[in-house]
Image (cartoon, rainbow, N blue to C red; front, top):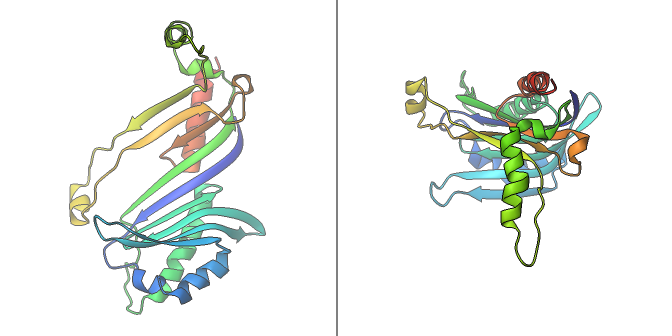
Length: 233
């Protein structure tokens, strides 16, 4: 396996009334964050259903050890912080700790459990070169039926059809274990997806894939290594 690119999303849910959302929406603090991380755009968000308010910062730069890491988005809501950026889950965690410190300094009342996460969700997107053909993702019977039978039936009098990008998606549904934690914090667990397909801009023979998973970077890489071991045989 050869990793070509990684992107990370970190979603952190905290307890009610811990994020100083009204204060952070003040132009002074908005401008502070814009200057610190060179954000190109800022938008205010409001959910018409719940009334929840938030601030979304887009296209910034986070510098660590002299290395620039692109921040796709930083969203701060009433009880949620979402970070989307290039790099690994460790990079996203480091940036989250900086954001957490910044928000903590805005809270005037000392709280020992301030901004302690109730739930943390890591999602990652990897582009990597793997040692197996995309056709290995499907059984020969299914692939042949689609590439021969289905394509023939889908053609019509004005066009023919060809097989496009090979993609596979699995839905992951979460069954709660800690019911009190979810009930006390009025939380629910949403469906996630694992997907794998040929990366845009690459051909089938390049064996370069884009994968999306509700895993941190290390676990995602280890999963792909295991998958590669099985499918390259």
